[in-house]
Length: 274
Length: 188
Ligand SMILES: C[S@@+](CC[C@H](N)C(=O)[O-])C[C@H]1O[C@@H](n2cnc3c(N)ncnc32)[C@H](O)[C@@H]1O
Image 1 (cartoon, protein in one colour):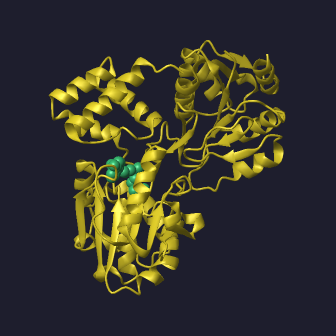
Image 2 (image 1 turned 120 degrees about the vertical axis):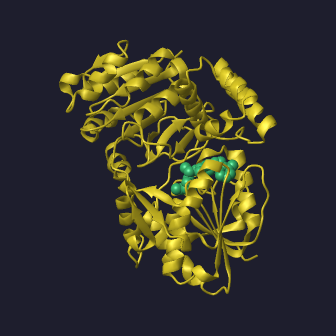
C-alpha cells in the first residue's frame, strides 16, 4: 500500500528523536510503535504526529513522557514460571561450577525480572558470588527497578508465580508490606549495577554467564533482532546461557549458529563452547 | 480490490462458533485467516490442536515476524497481542491488556486494517465484552468489509451488538453463512 501521511510523520518523528536525543526507535516493530504513538497523540490532544515531533524537539520535558509511550513497561515477577523453573533445575547446576558469576537482565523494565532472578539466586545459594547488571533505556523504569516497590495488589500473582517456579522460600520473606505497597529487600539489589544501556546503540560491556532478555526482542524488527542477538553472542562467556521470551526465537538470526538450544521449550540457549 | 486477508475475533462462546465456521473454509482457500479468541493467559494453546483436527486448512499459532501464507489459519498465542505489519508479516507484543484482554481483537483488527486497507474482511463473533468494536470500525473506515454474527444467533450478544453500534456499515450475518460468503467474495 501507499505510505500514508501518518506513516511519513512517524518516520520523521523517529528520525528526529534519534538525531536530537540518540534514542533509536527506527527499527522497532512498526505496527506496535504506531498504535502507541496514536495513543500518545490522542492523550495529549494533538491533531497530528507532526505536532508531537515539534513538541519533543522544542521542549526537553516531553521526551521522558514520549519514552513511556515508545517503550512498553509490562512485566511481572516470575512471569512464565516454567522458565524460572528451568533456570533453577537445568542452568543453576552449571552456574554452581563457577566461583563468580555475572548476570545481565537486559530490558529490565521496573525490575520484576531482576528481583525474580535475585530471589532465585539467593534461594540457590549463588547470590554471594553474583553480580547482576540490570539495564534499560527508559530512565523512569530504571529508577523504579532500583526502588523495588510494587503495588500490593500485584503480590498475589507474584507469589503464585514464585511457587510455580519451584521457589523454596516464601516470597513474603523478601519484601516488607507498607500500606498498599510491597518494598523488596535491599539485600536483593546490593550486588546489582543498574544502568542505562541500549541494545540498539550500545556495545557489549562484559563477559556474562547468563543473559536474560525477555519480551524485548519482539519489539524489534528482524534486522535489529539480528544485531541484538550478535551483541548477546559477544557478551556471553563460552558456555554461557541466554534466555529469551517464550514467543521469541533465534531462528531468524544470522548469529543463531553461535548458540545451541539448551531448554528448547523455555527458549534457553547456550553459547557454543567453540 | 479483492480481499487479501481475513481477521476474526471471538470471545465467550467463540470456540463453539468458530467450530461451526472455520471448518467451512475449504482447501485452497486463497488468503490467510487470523483469529483472536479471548482465552486465559496461563493456559497452553489448546485451540490450535483443537482446530487443526477440525479444519481443512492448516492451523497454527502465530509466531513473531513470520510472513503470512495464504490458506493458513493463525491463532494469537495466549497472553500476547497479535499484530500485522505493513509488509504482511505477523508480530506479537506484550503491551498492556485492552479491556482486560490480551490478545485483544482491536489490536489485530486495527493493525490489519492498516496493512490491508480495503482488501480486508473482518468478522466479529459472539462475546460478552466490547473488544473488537473499535477495530471493526477501523476496518470499515479503511474501506474493508465488516461482518458481524447476528446477535440473535450468538451465544452472547454483547460483542456483536457493540460492534454493530460502532460500525453500522458492517453486514449482519448468520453464522452458517459466513464461510460461504467469504469464499464467494474472495473468488468473485
Ligand atoms: C515488555 S518490557 C519487558 C520486561 C521484562 N524483561 C519482562 O519480560 O517481564 C520491555 C522492556 O524493554 C525495554 N527496552 C526497549 N528498548 C530497549 C533497548 N533498545 N535497550 C534496552 N532496553 C530496551 C523497555 O524500556 C522495557 O522496559
